[in-house]
Length: 334
Image (cartoon, rainbow, N blue to C red; front, side, top):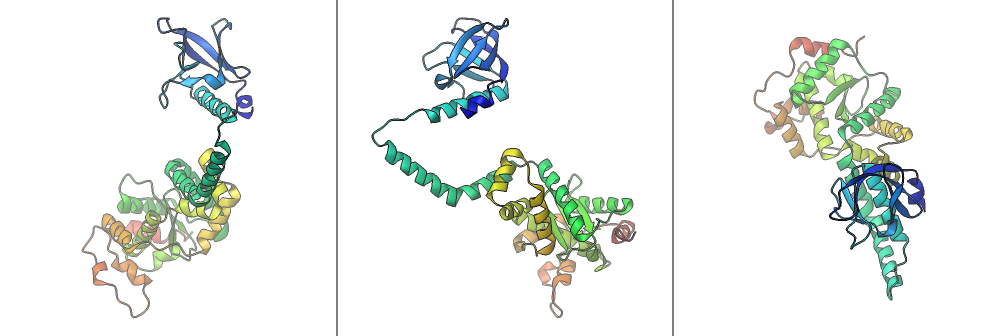
């Protein structure tokens, strides 16, 4: 049996009690041939439990407490997570392997198969993606974004870096998103979209945006627009949609995304126009950052168009001081 073979050499400690009145004893727990072997400190077996019959008395709670069957007073407490998971997996595998006789077995099986097939086609891809997005930690998103940055450099040239200008970019991120933000603003030599968010709270900004205006509100607007878009359209979700179900499952189960997938998505990001944020999201993000939207909108409108009055926000705090703004504007001039 595959599940048992995988854990045949696994061993952990445990606390075994022969009955409700007996004291608990330290024991060693290991897998035998379709049994769970419980041995004392000298290595002498004190009990063999049939794996198919083992019951979990406290599902979902750790340490786990197991019993050899429904009526037994004998118990085994295990704190080792790997051994707990192994016992559960082997129990489930054995349970699936046992025949389940019944008059309507074939019809029930066929119905289950059809239901699972329908779920796999219509529900599973979306559910799997949602679950993956929900559990992938920020550290993994940052790792994915950093890897994509490397491939973006290959496509668009080296990232613009200069110590004082990079510090100014960090100051700008704190001004827009709060002093405790972990958002990174990375300036690149050429980005047709002007700005785009990638996984890991990384916002790429085209160096040309910094020279569109002497008003830092323009560059801030492009950065905030990318953040609003990322809130409406998770960059990691976009990656998984392009990569497909296999990559999504691999990320969920192993925490890894193949390098070729990251490279393909890096190319797609710099080549395609990003999705457009909902106007309400734009309003919220700009309002939260206390940045007027008018200067940004003015650079996005066709000649002859005027900025809507609603976008002309009231006076806001300074975005960057003059020296930091000049340093940031010259970040690519090395």
